[in-house]
Image (cartoon, rainbow, N blue to C red; front, side, top):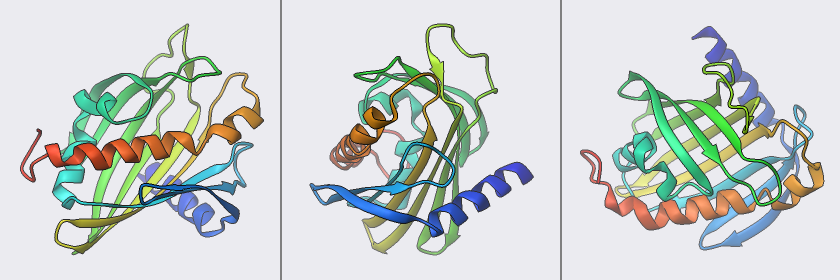
Length: 203
């Protein structure tokens, strides 16, 4: 628990110190920025968007790992590894890429309510939780934070920030030039499909 708290604190400090952010894409009410990162050779990604959903719907969608590939960009497979609590899970996912070898993640996803209308969702990689596959590159570091605010019933505003090291051998310019596409496609699909989720459970 202490390690998770420290990791989230460090990420929040990094996010607060963001410099040189550039708007790379604005479409379908989704803004995607790339920002210089002090901790990685790859640029940090930030996205802002609104979601026509309740916090409960968002929680159910994020925790429904069986259907993660329905909306998360280029997901090849997803599997729940451990349920820590109703608001915390650990899962494995593999994603494909157009230029580089497939990557896989082990992610600890945690949803915390900070106030009546605010939530923090953290997704932190655990690269050593299970053995790596021989034919897939394990992501050595990934930290994502969702800041969620309910502006009105059924209306969420979300700021998403991710810092990631893709591991392996990959041209930095390739990743940085394509980095904005994944969050845009992911959140576009999320906006389209979250209506499938009731406030009380899975679709």
